[in-house]
Image (tube, rainbow, N blue to C red):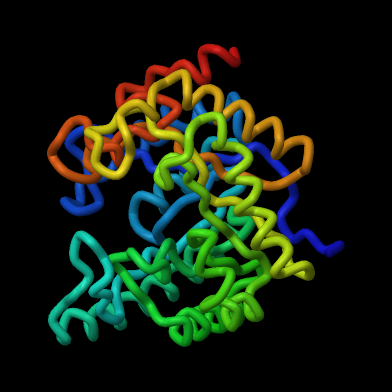
Length: 305
């Protein structure tokens, strides 16, 4: 494979919701708060991944443009369930009218993605149909046929490379028809969610990457999520398997491998997000950031400074 639509850079997943803010409540970070975040991030990263074509992402794009910040962005659409998924452990079954409404909103998200991409064409370097909407455990399942339609709609509307961000497993079977439509294949790898030790972490991520890359030798494969949590309540991630030292090791090993192999990796994620998951303060979904929610750096960044 000789064509790489997306060049290697230091990349990170960014969502700026602070304490008391959430996409679920509509309380979003202000322009100044986003500016503060990006001033922190520009010291180490050149590429950001944004998950939705919403007001928060529009603020991020405006800050980058207005302040002349040196970021490019992978901009996504956040699409929700169009079909039931009884396999989801936390609930993936919805009333029929909700699924129909979701389909309408998903198309609107794709159209908004096209609109924002064209408005900020010098900043948006790639676009993603959605996030983890086909893996077996998702609560927002979308069929492959529908993803293909969204891919074609995007390709008709923008000139940037089109991708879809998903766990590595579906790329090996159900997503093959979608892969044919895409410019770039984006995978997620989370060794700690799959009960791998820190000693196994990097090797497991490389194994995930190689499996997909070998399945699509003509396509560029990038990693759009990989990380290591720093706290857990023991649900889904064993308590003995997370701490700041483990995050530091995984981050440094992964970034060294990515630079050596020139593989684009968006590390997950920039900041802890306390709105995520349950109300339990040790909920692991809250604790993936390289920075705490108060914007102070964790060990991974202190040790590498």
